[in-house]
Image (cartoon, rainbow, N blue to C red; front, side, top):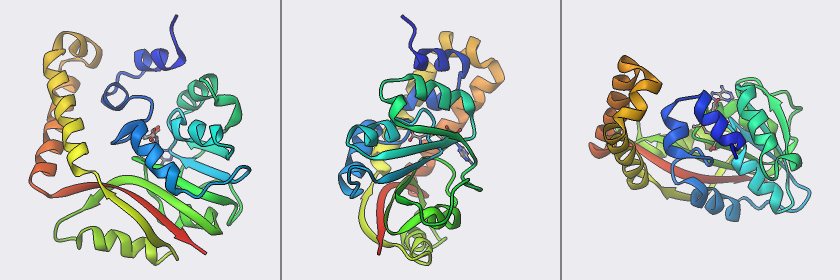
Length: 226
Ligand SMILES: C[S@@+](CC[C@H](N)C(=O)[O-])C[C@H]1O[C@@H](n2cnc3c(N)ncnc32)[C@H](O)[C@@H]1O
């Protein structure tokens, strides 16, 4: 039987669906669980999964009693998530993280995992006593490093509760992706087309090189306020 996720993989032949899976961020489901353990979400609390893809994090949070909303720019991803196990417990909304269709201060926990980060907007919709869970690339070079990243969020009233550096996991993820792109060329090339296929290989190769040169880092962050 074809699952809604299989159907998406067929339709969206993009490397991040192939290589990251349903929990489409570095660290996968294990990273989601690490964040959930620290998000201080209680049954009935509202949670926002911004840039949710198929809302794997939102569906996991719903399973522990939270009331999640999953937003994304792509309606096909939201529809697939709605049809997956636990999808009925999540509210699905087409919206850009740049401009979220919510009143101020309505969420107990705001999540944005390997998606577009809009600090002002994500902070606006978070409640006065809330948490913020991020999985993202962070600068490690002359831009000021991870401290500058944390400073920016602190300027919106957040204080850091937990941080886990994920750069080794990120390097390994993209190394595996690079190896798969080479090994399964006969599968991927017809899907991507020759030039886009080579561009994907270059992109993943450049990501690996930047992590290995220490120009870029990746991390999980849990901030809190109130
Ligand atoms: C790598 S996936 C991460 C998905 C999800 N957060 C997860 O961890 O499984 C990136 C997602 O961000 C969405 N996205 C990118 N830019 C966005 C934006 N400005 N507003 C809302 N969603 C966005 C994409 O459509 C995609 O579903």
